[in-house]
Image 1 (cartoon, helix red, strand yellow):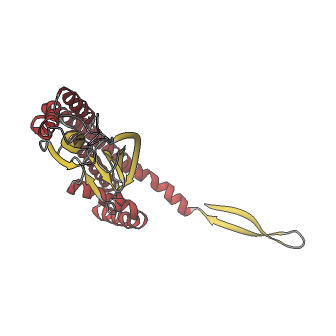
Image 2: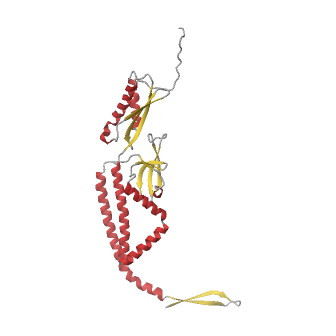
Image 3: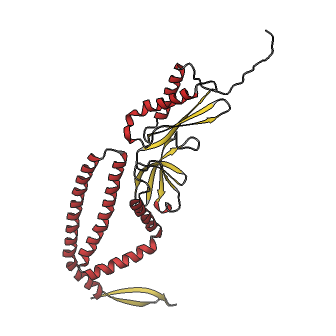
Length: 311
């Protein structure tokens, strides 16, 4: 079988076309004849892959249901999500390997195909591969987990998701230069995982669901400072007594001199996801100070005292 293609590739001065190409199709016919041989192999491969996929979906749904029922804390839920993500990526790799091995039909062909694919991907996807390495670092080293309150570089937020290429943060903005008093902005930040090797990572909830907070009250020099300190401690204990032994540390107080009085700083741990406790502590302190007779708040003011003046 021969295909004749007439092509006017040159035109003489008298308008006569010249040139004729003869393209043989024997090789093309050979490819067409071989197609029926590949159909059974293709059908077998697809059948095996569908069965493997169905098994994966059933196992994943069952395991997720069981683990989520047993997860009692935010960190436990984060661990479940991370486990399922690792399981999904692992299955994806196994899925590809099964498809390649089934279709190639021989271990030698399979090895060659994997080698060529690895070489091409290693050259064309250097940054994504660095991101995958960073993801593996997160899985092994566990610098943070899903639901942790972290600061990555100059970004502060709660870890919402950890994927192969990105870490998703629910952004928070902080008041001043302390972790205390931060509020959510409603924005999500996507941080490429390959950048994690360059950023400083600070985890504020490592191993627990609480973050440090503090309330500062300034009392006059005439106040009973020991009583003022006791009021601050009792206000915190009253509102945090339901936390039990989960809190990493008991409330602590520090005092410093101020121009208008003595500052009492009470530091305590509060749930990372319920930051209203600082406001409640302030209200409780104010209520107790108003009831006390020998304790009063200090504020910037000027007193004029006259000596030797006759009435």
